[in-house]
Length: 332
Picture 1 (cartoon, rainbow, N blue to C red):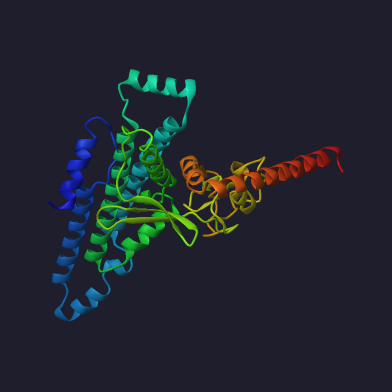
Picture 2 (picture 1 turned 30 degrees about the horizontal axis):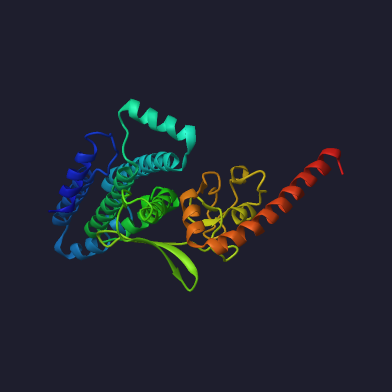
């Protein structure tokens, strides 16, 4: 079965109960087909000795009025809607999993009243599948674009999408779902009724350096390094910037030139990611709570030692912050 048909069947099944945004593969292929017909008719109209020149200077080399006006704007909008929906649903799921006591009871009660209650594991599995199949759809349609145009503009668009934070595999919530899966799998030893999200997802250590790895279908593999590039140690109290890079919270605050008291939300929009140097990546930073739970379980000795040093460091930084505030207040 061709992927386009498989994708449409999957999305139709998902949309029976939920209105989920999708990548319009059929519509995008029609745009490319129309573009191809335009090129062929133009090629036939050219003299024989001009065909070679036309092939070497197709619209893909510079601009294509058909695709630039319809294809990329349409795909950009659809990718934004898909990643927005995924992030929102994943955030709600993980908040439910991490909540406790009366708050968790209220959330569950609200879900049941609305008739939308879904088991945590099944919801997580659906979210991961949704992210993967949409990532494959985008990859295939961009590959087809480059094939028709004899170009690499599709690859360039993918890089642009990553810089705009609408590449779904770049989402910090996918990293959280991977950690969520491993945490559930570890709980299975204590509770035989617990189910795993999907196979092939592991926390591995290479020469003491941890990383999250997940082998997915259609040759997609995620490998997320969990070493902070600032302190060069395993991330502690990890936070993901909107560019997708993960740092320790204190290290991220230092990179943003803010105090831990003020927090990353107060960072200047012009502050750049310490790794990729992209601006405006701190305001939407996400605390990776599930990842913190996973690392604390997997590295108990390191986590205990780091917890003690972090407490001392946080107290020092908080003291320096309030002392500076007091001096500014009295004009010293």
